[in-house]
Image (cartoon, rainbow, N blue to C red; front, side):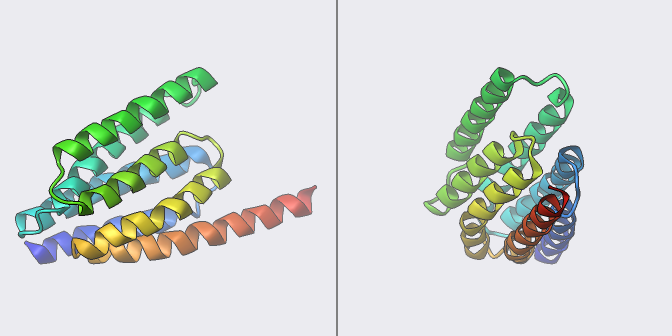
Length: 178
């Protein structure tokens, strides 16, 4: 079971890294949705392997997959007010599900990371998404280490570096154009 869990974690990691290299908000969200679904499976299998704290990762990634689909479906008609409402609603859902799946203080690390990700992905600006992802990565990385998530740990380290690289690259391109 643990080997299957780690395989799903590595697949999620690959999708995550690719997502931060994508140019548009929409493509980043589609990739993040797939990534969240792969991580649901990964953390659930870790939970079945005896890692009790991994249940929070499975549950919160499920909330995030739903969040990403809603953000995709509302992208073109989203007003600032709707964006704020969705961000608050999904942040509240993350907190509620995080508390319901709480097993120890380890859960708090992932809860913080997922709230930051919710804020990040509700901002239709790829560079701001990348900045928030870089802020949330240390919290998620600590959680991944404590739940023995190899794919998750590598994902957070590489995603941070990937988001930073893309942020700097697109920032340079913007400066050249202006």
